[in-house]
Every structure is written in C-alpha cells, then in structure tokens.
Image (cartoon, rainbow, N blue to C red):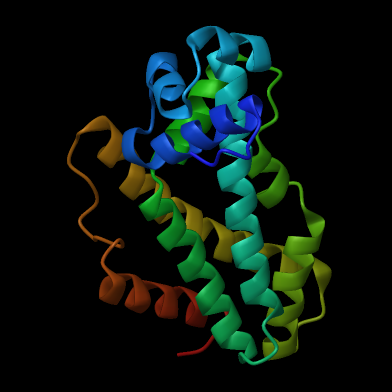
Length: 201
C-alpha cells in the first residue's frame, strides 16, 4: 500500500484491489490490506455500501474512459471503431463480472442510488451521439429515429451477451451455448453484429 496515501485513500485502494479477486469482501479484509482498523472504514465511509459505491464508480469510470478512447481514435476506420468499442465493453465486463452483481446489490440496498455505470452508459448522450455519427458516416443514414434504432440494436447486442454470460458465472449455473469470453468467438460475433447494424452482408 502506498505510504503517501491518506487513510481514506488507503481504504478505497484496498477495496479496489480486492474487488477483482473476490467480487465481495469483508470490512475486516479491507481494513487488513489497507493497514487500518475497521473503525476507520466506518469513520470515512459510514458503511461498507458507501465504500462499495466508490469502488463501482472507480471501475465504471475506467470502462467509460477506455471505450471513449476507442471511439476517438483517429487512426482507426469507422467500422473498426464500432468493432473495437463493442469488444472493449465485452472484454472488460468478462474480466470484471462482479461489477454487474455489485451494481445490483447496491441498488437493492439503496433505492435512491444512481450507479455510475448507468450515468455513463445510459444517460450520456455524447456517447450515443458519437456512435450514431460513426454509423451515419458509414451508412449515409441521417434520419435521427433510424440512428436511434441502430444505436439501441448495437448497444443491446453488446450488453445482452454480457448479461447472458456473466449472470451464470456469478450464480454458478450453466451459461450460454456460445462462450463470448473466448476471443475468437467474440470477434466473430461482434463482426456479425456490426455488419448487421450497418446492413453489410
């Protein structure tokens, strides 16, 4: 643990470090890794749920920044931007599947909680407009309603398989017949998805 971090930062850093390994962890485990006592967590974050909200925000912001960089890449063709964007979203969620259950659990605990991942991916019009502009540039479509449909199709085509794959993983039941965590399978699926959105045979 970085000695230059203050106590609050040490606690958050420990929770972030444990999250990919455990998905969930006890306050005792967080305190041990942070080198503080459990009371310090309660003092700085008031509750474990509040701490986990900060963890959710951290991972959601990373995901948002990564996919934003993909869409802004001037060295990539428009179609490849869509393919890379879809792949980044899928790959990230397959790597950190506990993020979905974390958001679900936080929402169950606090009905007023507004997850960062929802703010970033469902409420951010800039993201939608960037994707729609790419689709418009490729297809020549300029009708806003049609572009809305295309965006919904593409986004759903990415999110749906993530849910079908991740939920069985975290609930220990048999998953989908297609393993999109496999890079080759995922590449074929995304290529098919993007071609269908762009009406390319």
